[in-house]
Length: 139
Image (cartoon, rainbow, N blue to C red):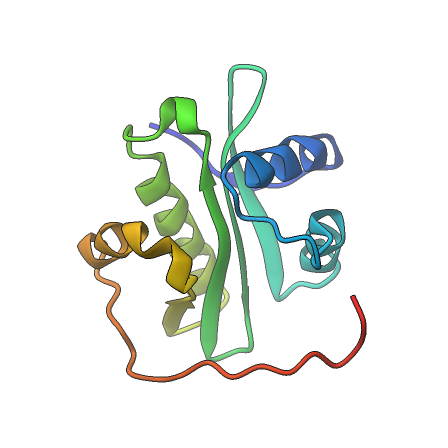
């Protein structure tokens, strides 16, 4: 049984390294800034599971009061297949539900189609919507 807890200052470097190892970071997003923003408000957080010498799984989650979102669902490749991904999603769902959120959402990059079966097995389905975006400021 793994326990997910809120990130601490000591976890940040481990989390960023995990995200990089899992290919979740992009050059135009500063992952340290993403962690800092998630920690700066009560409507978002980063949850981590520790093992060995550091963080073995993480999930960032936040909400607008109605819909909750998950980002950076990551599991150390050396321990994938042991249920940590499921545990990360479930930890995020519990955190969101405790905040009064009724719906959980996540975005999967179209280049990461291999995880769609994983999320489908957890009850996530296409919401038949298109996500549009616009950059408001330079990165």
